Length: 125
Image (cartoon, rainbow, N blue to C red; front, top):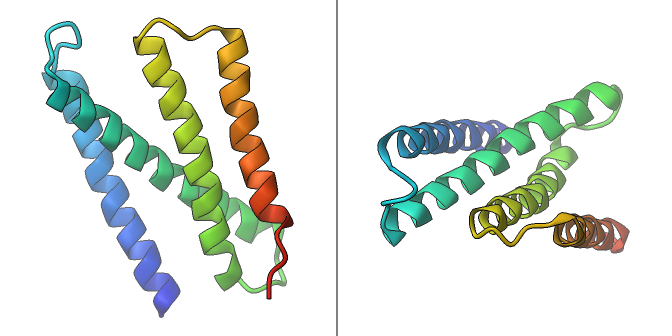
């Protein structure tokens, strides 16, 4: 029952975040937008990436592991989607500042992957 509640909350938040991202893209001019609208865009983009990534990773894990319990896959999927969303949002923000090059991009992605590997290697009680 808790998993169903978490999945419903994830779908609801993701739906609102995607709607907010689409509205931000179509209603704000990035060259004349103030700081509040840019923060709103990046926040809604970040939350929608977390939601979409969590759903995709969670259902991929369910399909790959047929005989295991599905309850233990939810929170690691959220964590993995969080690290991916942080990396993509940081790359998008750096591109908007015109400071993104291949070395910085590889560094951001490498930090994200190493953080996930750190949390995967921790011992579970």
